[in-house]
Length: 435
Image (cartoon, rainbow, N blue to C red; front, side, top):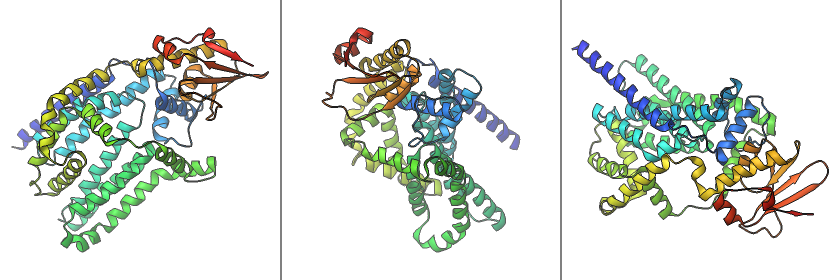
């Protein structure tokens, strides 16, 4: 029997490895280096800074450090950063399949395989996994923290010493990963709320005093290990900015200033990102409503209740729009394999061409002042770029560059934005020189 179980386990590991490899391949190929947008160029240039290389533009005061530190190794090794950054992101994000498998396996092997296959085929995750961004990576790392936290809470006392030890191991790992998730994406700190709600939901109220007493040491260990990876960064922040929490403050200030997103847009995006899988999720959620026979059942029910509350009041709402969702899912897959430079109606092509113009026609040592897409201009022009915000009489369709050399400032205002964006061109005679 044990030999049979070992054989099944070996087959399971082989098929899971093949599924992860498949997920990696469909996220990586074709390798798209046609364009790197705003956030991507910021992280790449921050990586240059951490690698000890000159960077034309950085946002160290509002960007978390862990992703650019990982990318800095690519620059230190002298590899092609545009290619290998895509490879690294696709590989790391394909591990979401493993996390989904392990989480769902607490129900059953069938649930684990269904979960892993669904995650491997999510259209938006395929697209986001290519980007040099923190979103998909933060979801992976934060999810791993939740997984180990859940495993720690779910420990049932058996032999007191061994169980206490396992609880500490799980909670310590969860805390360490949680701290790393914050260094990947500052807003990952909101997962602390998910952990707290899970703690409340998983422990029956009559058991709270005894259970919390037994969890006091593991929870303390979680907190200590969560803080531990952030200590070097906080020390660096204090040395660089004179304040331990300056990057957190500035980053959350930027997030808070964004315009609110409408509910209709959010629901549309969910359908676009996840397609038919929303229907599957709803069905399994209702199927699982009364499956609260274990900690895993409790936690899944809690997460599904929350998701359903956020999405729909009644399940019947989703079924009339299944056809629309299928169409949106097809759109999602088509977007996943559209070259990055093909987005935004040509604006990306124009920005890249503008950067090439600067590199070829503006004297070395000049400083570029701009108010739009500055990190991208810095990345492709390899020139120092500084962002300015206030221009007199600046129309919404104008894109202004102020090019400054050692002799005198020169202002170039590009006119006819729509025409030149549509044609994807940026040439010297498209600028009006102003004294």
